[in-house]
Amino acid sequence: QLQLVESGGGLVQAGGSLRLSCAASGRTFSRYAMGWFRQAPGKERDFVSAISWSGGTAYYADSVKGRFTISRDNANDVKSTVYLQMNSLKPEDTAVYYCASWKDGLGPEYARFGSWGQGIQVTVSS
Image (cartoon, rainbow, N blue to C red; front, side, top):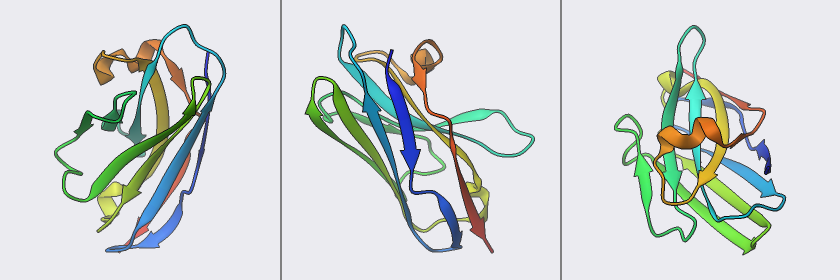
C-alpha cells in the first residue's frame, strides 16, 4: 500500500494560481497511475485529472481543461511525486483536493480500489 501526502493548498483570489503536490512512497508490486479528485461542500467527490506511470497519458475533467496541468516525477520505483498546476482559478474550484493512486493502465474509476491521501483544502475567493 502506498502512502500519499498532499501539499500546496491554500487561499487564492479568483484568476490566481496554485500548485498542488502529492508525494507517494512505499513499495508496490506494480506501477501505478496517479490523479486528483476534489470534493466541494455538500457535493460528491469528482475526478479532476490523472496521469499514467510514464507520464505519457493524462486525463482532465472538462471543467479544468486548459486551466490545470498534471505532471509527475518518478524518482524510483518506490517514490513518485505528482503535481497539479492550477491556473485561472475560479470560486467553483473551491474544494478539498485528494490525491489517489491505482494500478497503471486502468482508468480513474479504479481509484476507489487504490490509495488515497488525506486531502488538502483549496479556497478561491471571488
